[in-house]
Image 1 (tube, rainbow, N blue to C red):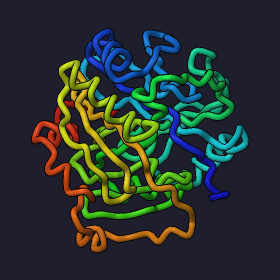
Image 2 (cartoon, one colour):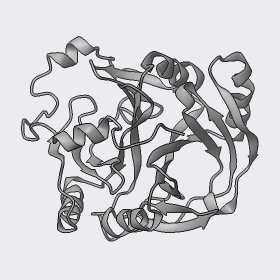
Image 3 (cartoon, rainbow, N blue to C red):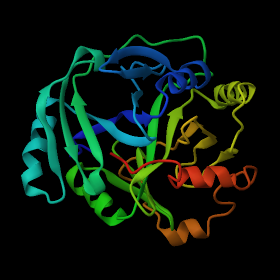
Length: 301
């Protein structure tokens, strides 16, 4: 995937209605750790070496503020900036510039894609020291699923502008990647742009189960799972945060390359035991389905 200027997913920014409440959830319950604060925003890290996985901002209504992608290097940032004028439906929000130390520093660009989707792209961001000893805490942010009323436009943006690759299609979602993970982003058919869910990588199934146990002990029921998905083959367990955002612990996603045969919706509609290969997870809760549809969120920024 040498022509892809994007190398991965860095972080997600969420607008929350009670910053202190959300910060407590994501640190004390979900297992992240505060790493910085700037202009009223809280930056929370996982146990891996990424500077932060989540940014929380105080807003009047819960909403997706944006996502941050990692670029290959500074020249990739400049190349994407130059490409904007030749690609319809994308506009520059902030030209390439030095990023503040509170967010890890580096070099970055902010753009707006279809439906007002805000994407921050950065390179040369400082890593942090790995945290070891507690595998019940997330290692990294691994994928984001977005609801969209215009999946075709979003797909064109991610594939043709950013250089992602299509992994699989189902009747509900398009799964796309920028590295070896089966999917980094998935696009779900919806009535507007919103966050469907955000997923965090756990070291293994044992760590996922311990993490899920911590959520239950703190009064957050498993809304769907434990199970193993069809596309991606990853193990999953879903919860809902205090603002109605869906968060997932996941592990063991398929690692694929250009030899992977992309499968269509017909293939997956006939796949045995979908959406849980094990046949264990059964149906998601009605509350989860509403939250995944963005029912508790304001329109994305």
